Image 1 (cartoon, rainbow, N blue to C red):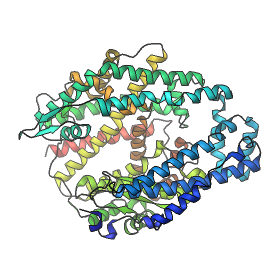
Image 2: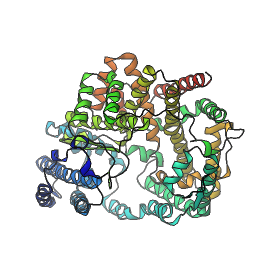
Image 3: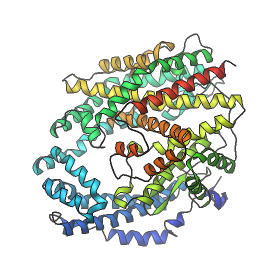
Image 4: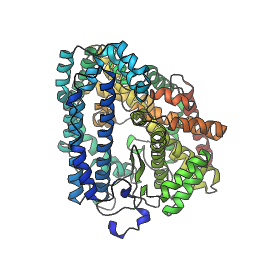
Amino acid sequence: MERSEVESKYKWNTNDIFTSDEEWESYYTKAMQSLDFSKFQGKLNEAENLLAFFKKQEEAGRMLERLHLYAHMRHDEDSRISAYTAMQAKAISLYVRFSSEVSFAEPELTALPAELLVSFSEDKRFSDYDYYFRQLIRSKEHILPASEEKLLAAGGEIYSQFQNIFSMIDNSDLTFGEVEDKDGKTITLTHGTYGVILHGEDRELRRKAFEKYYKSYISFANTIAATYFGNVKKDVFLSQARKYSSCLQRALSNEDVPVVVYDNLISAVNESLGSMHKYISLRKDLLGLSEQHMYDIYAPLVSDAELKLSYEKACDLVIEGLAPLGEEYISLLKKGFSEGWVDVCETTGKRSGAYSTGIFGIHPYVLLNYQPTTHDVFTIAHEMGHSLHTYFSNRSQPYAKADYRIFVAEVASTVNEVLLLKHLLAVTDNENLKKYLLNYYLDMIRTTLHRQTMFAEFESVAHDMVEKGEPLTSENLCALYLDLNKKYYGDGIVHDREIAYEWSRIPHFYTSFYVYKYSTGIISAISIANGILKEGDAAVRRYLSFLSSGGSDSPVNLLKIAGIDLTKKEAFQIAMREFDETLLLFEKICKK
């Protein structure tokens, strides 16, 4: 279907950003002329100059965000239109220039005496930047003399090469061959088709795809191990240069997250792995397998459970499911559905998948490619969770504090999914749908919490090895990964030789200590959703305050507003109990 065939009510309204491409071009020219910050260089030690710099930086930043938002949304509507590809490239080039123009500011500010930074942070004129100054002051002990900072900065392109090398191997050099399905159809293996096959019902096809896919990684294992070793050594070098006690401390310090959160995550999940093992064994029984392999772990347990709702009916269901969040939240949800926030239909040339996007001063937007499936109903709830988090933060915070950190980015979206799921479980009489939903929830927790925590533990041990002077090789990385796989999945599955090489295909490992945030996100969301359903209005008020907090403090402190303290084990234990209780319900319904 072409975009021109879609009714306007199913399209997002980009007129709220710019009314025409010509208006965008005019605004681009204006933005291009506003990027000279040279007059501020060397003068940020004076309050008046610093205030003027912040004001100009904000004005330029907001202009660039608006230009980029329009260009990338129009490009995603139809990637065949070269004009929007060009506009997107022009917007990105302005961002690069802007970053270069203001790059002097942070080194200049961190070089100032702590007493002066404290005085700025306590000055009411700088109230929008008080958390920023606290961050600067906290980081000062890790800032080096100017000449050394310049030397470290010069290595920036080198530091990113390990990720670039892996990306080239993973996306260009590796080929996976072809597999044949039970009907004799030849399928070319790619990252995408491999995932589809693993979630399919054809077991022999899953086995063949699994073995061929990993055969390619095994053939490059030594090269990938050397690349990963280089990436970890880079982390160790930068941590030592900046006087951190460990790579983990450096990574979490940059996010203003205490190391105890990481430790709590790994210990809490490790203590509850018995339930995970029980679920894996139950999967084996339900699939009727005498021997379950790693290529069976995503095989569907429940079929024919699609809701098959029209988009309007799906939105109505999402509104019903999120009703516990209160009148204001539901009113905004309806506003988003009816006032051009959402681009609904799959059309030729449109970007696949779904996302939420938004900038300060303009309402959020959601891209969908809606199909009448149960999964896509949950996608609506998920993406609108992101959008309303953005809406509340932008409405309540000044520009400098509106943008929330990645650490909390998946909380609101997952809260919506959990609330919708629990609503459906409560209202449906369809036993097959109940079974599907319980299995969906178990696998959501398994893949987002248990699996990502296993990755997090792998990263922690690998970095610890290098910090102690041990090399990383294909052999010891495979041994480490296989031991973790056995610990997390238990005896209900065969730990195939190939799975020892899974570490070699995880791109997130080149952004060290990133994946744990998926786990803490779902842990926080489960606790928040349960609190809302049990406590009602009081918990909703806390949650809306959290959504409105943007990036005004450390993400761990902001979660405390919602009643979640990740420096203690209670929130982690609540999530573990949720998995236990869901597993019991699933077992019970499967035995009927």
